[in-house]
Length: 100
Image 1 (cartoon, rainbow, N blue to C red):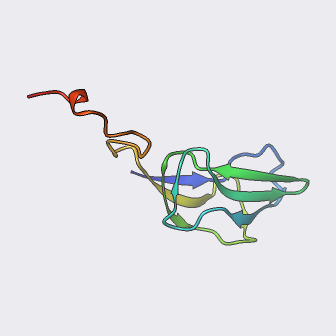
Image 2 (cartoon, rainbow, N blue to C red):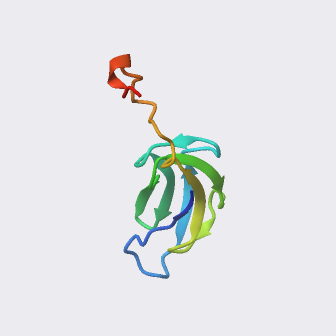
């Protein structure tokens, strides 16, 4: 499933400029929920935007130093919710699997 990553409401006034200062990930990068995705700058603060889900960064929709609005889509991610196993799971012993 493809999800959109949006600029969150950072609690600043609507006239405060929000600028994208850094992408932490390239398109095609696999991210875990909570990994840093991008860095936004507002007057007096720097805020990291984290990956909202486990998945792959499909598209970065804005460039460095672009001025953004609250709610604007900055990226699209493909979720990995359909994957049956995570990479951290082990294969287990043969006896761990059900017999038919």
